[in-house]
Length: 117
Image 1 (spheres, one colour):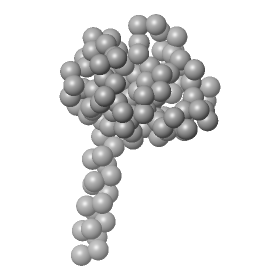
Image 2 (image 1 turned 90 degrees about the horizontal axis):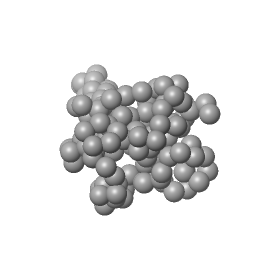
Image 3 (image 1 turned 60 degrees about the vertical axis):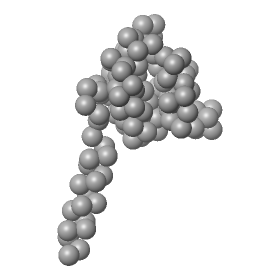
């Protein structure tokens, strides 16, 4: 019986980490080439405290808990690259944006934990 519970928990974690359908994924190394692109909207969905402590200056802070209220400030036809601390919240945010009709959404795998900049 224990192994069934463990298998269910592992399955749940794997399912939660899967990117939303249609969401692109890039590494932090690939992000370095994209940060200066003015045609991309760069969004950091961490809390204001996390953002203040360490962030990539080109990224705008829109915490995940207010993203749904701030979507109107973003352009649906322009690529959105999303980052968080580890990739979990940004994956959630990417899914929300895709469901709201954003065409080109990219999640940064590993988030700020993997950023070497």
